[in-house]
Length: 273
Image (cartoon, rainbow, N blue to C red):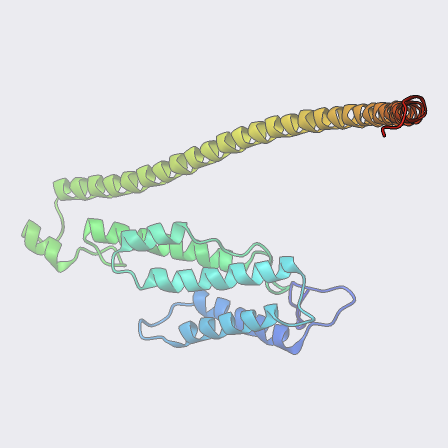
């Protein structure tokens, strides 16, 4: 299912196209760049991800495209990289951490040298980094754990006081609790939607079942009525034929009687002078 150069995807009996090879090479490069520490002004990764999207769309329209599972895995990794870049543009570390939780990394290694998918490693690294940044913001420390200037100004000493540390820890716990509550609320909403969908599906299934039973009963009644109609039509036809025969014979007898009566009347009655 795709590419050469030790890639994890292999299509048995089929050679990977040049477009797929280029896509996998660029995907490996993007995963490597995402795992490295980048400057804020770094722009190449975003351009590479945009190129990945274009190549993926072109690959989907090819006649000799790979299997749907491979296409889905490519799309999953490209969407992960795109979502990671969008999360990095957020201003608050808590927003970054929340956005990072909704990202779905790839499930299959891109190359055969990888034991764990690179996107999964990047996902874990970014989660740890955003958690550390959020803790630093709440505790008022930099990446090395030293107090920042605003904390010094607030405390009036070189480092934070124990009460401030407890307050910062409480604020961190509050933010984490808020995120946990948000996740539980989303899970409950998804569970409610699933239950509602299940209820609607069962109701629709019951209605369809009743409609099928009604339709079957109507078809049986229609068949019975059709058979009765055929029987009555045959009987009516026979009755009509019999009545026509009797009527015909009766009319013939009446006509003959009238004719004979007229002849006798003419013969017997004298002619008028």
